[in-house]
Length: 274
Ligand SMILES: Nc1ncnc2c1ncn2[C@@H]1O[C@H](COP(=O)(O)OP(=O)(O)OP(=O)(O)O)[C@@H](O)[C@H]1O
Image (cartoon, rainbow, N blue to C red; front, side, top):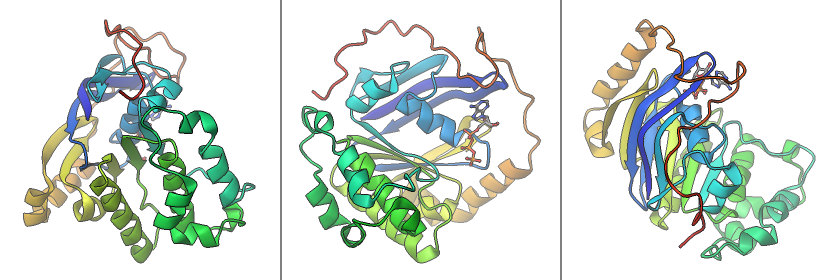
């Protein structure tokens, strides 16, 4: 359902993702773990279209989407739950949900699945907090709201950027349970995580990103059988000398701006659900 093939991404400071290839099957959770600065957020932002790759492919359900505008990628069925939740402090839960359930989204072909009523059934805590503003919610409630908002976009692929960050263990476990339950409904989930234990608890497959390269990508059962090996790999990544930054080929953008994509040779139509 979600494939990245030799995805290359960089900023003015240098290359950040080096030929990242992942293949996430429908109804499964692919976790990508890595230390600070490994490129996890860059990966999900690139899949969501917020950062343009300079090389490689991204396929959603077989359609190449790399380099498209974020709204077109969203219409292809990609939902993003950003790091830090990004809920609006002044809007109520009900207002967040109403905005996310805007009619153009409901009109997306094949997008009849998630309604506000179904969301509130799944997340009863949000039903209790409907009239509360974003800044009156706990971290766990904000995270639930961020996930609800993404679901109302009717995704086939859900991207989650460190959803357990800053949550108490019990709340983090609830978020992980929710992620697992969503995958069991058929959603394809890409979960980036800094904490290995969150990934191990919920993933079907785990990849390790080290300085922008995938250095490990195996079924999570293997990691669960020998979590020490994976933990050691992550610690090694933490103490190893980072490689010197390499300039992005053909970069012309201002510092801090994402790079332009390679020409993919693919047409830019058919970006809706089949
Ligand atoms: N907009 C940007 N402009 C320039 N460099 C950036 C930009 N965003 C990220 N970087 C750099 O890219 C590298 C990877 O950052 P990224 O945020 O993707 O890592 P991460 O694995 O998500 O880290 P964290 O766990 O801290 O969120 C870092 O060196 C970071 O400084």
